[in-house]
Amino acid sequence: MNDIVAIPEDPGAVAAEIAVIEKQMGTSAYIRDNGKQERYRALVRKRDAHSSILPQSGPRQNFSHAAPMPIASRAQYQAENGTTQGYDSYMAAMRTAADVLTRLPAHEMASLEKSFEGLPDDVSQAAIFELASKAPPRAPIVNKDLENFATTPWGSALVQEWGSEAIDRLGTLRARLLRAMMKLDEDAQLDLNIWLDNLSDAAAMAVFRRMSV
Image 1 (tube, rainbow, N blue to C red):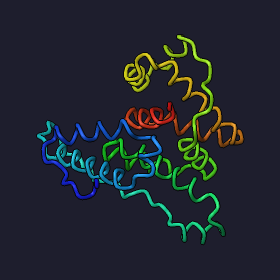
Image 2 (image 1 turned 90 degrees about the vertical axis):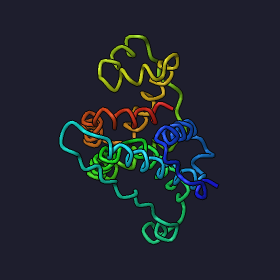
Image 3 (image 1 turned 135 degrees about the vertical axis):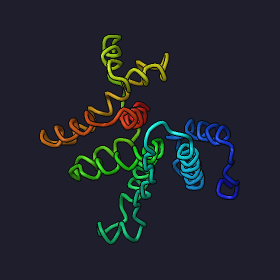
């Protein structure tokens, strides 16, 4: 069981276990494994604690951890919606959103969650449920599209990370964005575009990495 194994003190061991779990994210087994998700969050907290005690050249920043994303119980969901229909999809969506957040340092996590909560409900719901949905057929991508995507620091980093899969991953990302946009009216599409354009490099990498699978 993940919750009975002590979190290692060695930073290298923590980083290695985080890397192993991150490779499993997005799989159905991981989404159903609440223990592993909690294990991952504990490892991230330990990693950030290690980082916070390292010597720094400038003033020490406050990397206080964001509060856990609130997830409604089945009873709370029923009270709010009048039915439990759709609860399983809601849970999958919220777990996926939490996975995106926990890939970030604590200060980035708090900033992304705050900006996301500021979106209109229709925009945030379209984004969350797109993240949790099965990917649509890939959009057509050519090398020029890949070059344009790599003009940003986060785009360049993702292209390097994806390697030979970069065209396929970008095709999936574009298809997901198009499908999410199709659910929104013109004003809501503008809100989503503005939010995406203003993500930090770290947040953009976390969001787009998840949307590329």
